[in-house]
Length: 346
Image (cartoon, rainbow, N blue to C red; front, top):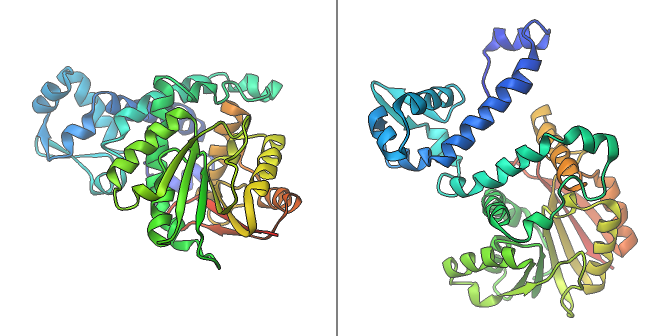
């Protein structure tokens, strides 16, 4: 949660009297560092059950009291922690929306992002193919596992709204979730459509994430299959699907990679089948905050993997060239900066 200046402070920032460079470089960097450190020591997990004193927090986190007090004081003004008397607790907003249980396992992935962003100038100067890192490091190892945890949290934050707002003219029978990782979308779509059978396609590390979901969602687990493949290098399953889903996939590929993927998808999509593409798009409507979320994610994707947040009209053209029509864009209300495209196979 960002620092929240009052009305007068916002005016001074807008006219340039308060220097924004300090807020946008130093302060935002320090804020991220404090939050990730809180994840490292599982601070939020310890506070989840109720208020604790400084001494109790120091004991539970195995940290010095001076160190943990400094950290707590940095988290109060940005809305994560509150203090009453000599006790610290989590704010209501924190308890409502923060992935407390998942966050410690997400920290390694976010630290890896921060490290690679230090070389962003080189990426801007050279536009390296595949970005500075690419997705190879996300296929295996500790960072890859941490990335999968982050994807689970991201999926859990958007899945309900996406499924509720996905209006299909058909009742789909076969769904393929490309790069589906956790499989949460397959679970919810199977609940929405009782005759639907779904397949999660991903790397091995992604399917390990999906297996966790299937052990938890037993009511639909028998209707969900797992298919290990690298969709950039390998073919899709050899059958026709009437519902294709991509969640946060196209932003990680360059234009040629997306065009090739859409050709594969078109070949595997039944006539009149539907494709849905959840992502961030540069022409997203709404406030500067909404547009800023999409653009900042696009910036990180460019540096990290050579991807970007694409314009809706560009994606629409790719889909039409691949054999889809009736391409529409729907903006999510509860997840600012996220939208999904829906189209139908000819």
